[in-house]
Amino acid sequence: MEKRLNRSDLMFSLAFLLMLVIAIGAFFYGVKVGTDRAEAGRAPEAAVEAAASPEPNAYQQQDLVSFYHTVFLSYREFHNDWLDTRNKWLGDSTSDRSATLKQLSKSAKRKYDEIKGVYVAPISPQLKAAQTDYLKSLKLFEEGFAELAAKANEGSAQATLDAIDANSYYKEALKFSLSAQQDYFGSMLKWAESVNADIPAGVENQDVISIAQWKSLPLIVKLKASSDYMSEQAVLTDYLPHDLTAKVDQFIVSGQADKRKIKSFNAVADLLISTEAVTSGYFNEVKARFYANEQLPQLPFFSSGK
Image 1 (cartoon, rainbow, N blue to C red):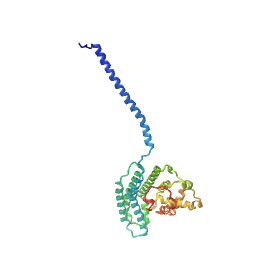
Image 2: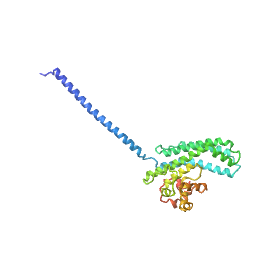
Image 3: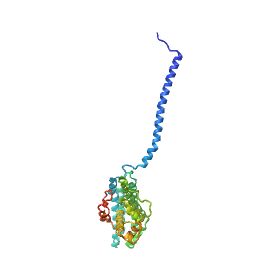
Image 4: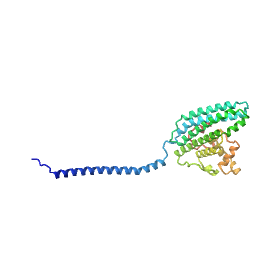
């Protein structure tokens, strides 16, 4: 005959089961809380590590090359057309300057559309900034030239060029153009830092670079310094930062800096630019002589002079 549980036995059994369920629940809750706290404690450390470590795929050589062909070269075509136009006007008083400016305005618009459609990964922010500034420059050239076209045939060619140089749109366009160039060469320095730990951080925020310091710098750092200098001068040129760098090095190596008692890169650059001694493609004329062992990204203008 089966023994029936009395009321007290039943209550005891239920209480025991309830306590067992609560104990198991408390155990798993404790495990979850401990895990969450451990992960929360590791999160700031991971964030600091992520902030301190550069993105592994930023500023790759293929990105620099792609930018050269799709952004830099497209902009440079417009840039060179405008330089050619300036020279043509000074040599031909019969040029229809008004029509030419209208054509250049349309050309700036076409180049703007080309460059705007190019994808530049935000993982390389200086390259992205360079694209943005080239776009701003082209937009301002487009608007400035369209505004100036109406009166471009009035007076002499030099008077027209003076009016253009004084135009607020034109000044801003030039500023953004040089800022873009500065960021592009800054991106090359970022690339160099990623492939060679011995590359110094650069010479940013340094107003004057002594000749002794200049001579100790790797070529890629000199290029960045030259692009910074050119941006500060706000002058439209057919040569590029590496051409200026090579001319400065040639001037120093030849003993001219010592002879003239010039003490800084900045003073040498001032002299060379004021005397129009820097020419487009000069870098490639002396590359084998001065820079045979220097490390550069494989960009066309470091080999072809373009």
